[in-house]
Image (cartoon, rainbow, N blue to C red; front, side, top):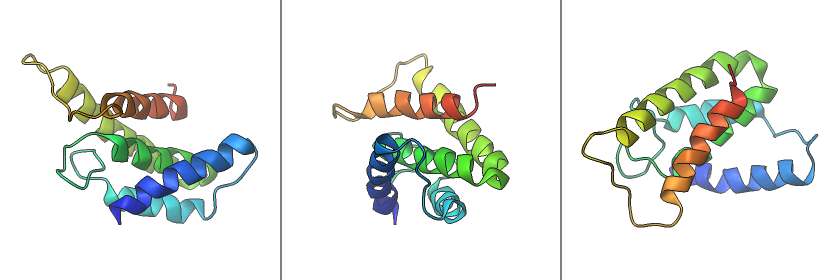
Length: 123
């Protein structure tokens, strides 16, 4: 199930990239599905509840973009972003530094996930 979030994000991203007026299919279901996979710690991960990485960007993208179309889910999306940003801040601001896996896209994915929340909720 988690990899479905990872596969849907680029598909939906391409759809929106080619047509800014495109609508995501079944946005309420998309939000429900993505939120069901977010850990209570705030991450989307198939390894650990607090593991941040590309699946976290994929998950938050589905939540924020789906909620932009399913306005009744906006509060749920905001709460999701708050959990994610709390976890991100705790990990990145640790005094002993932070360590992420040795991949070229993990830290950029985390920064992009924070940016996606800021785009959706600029206030």
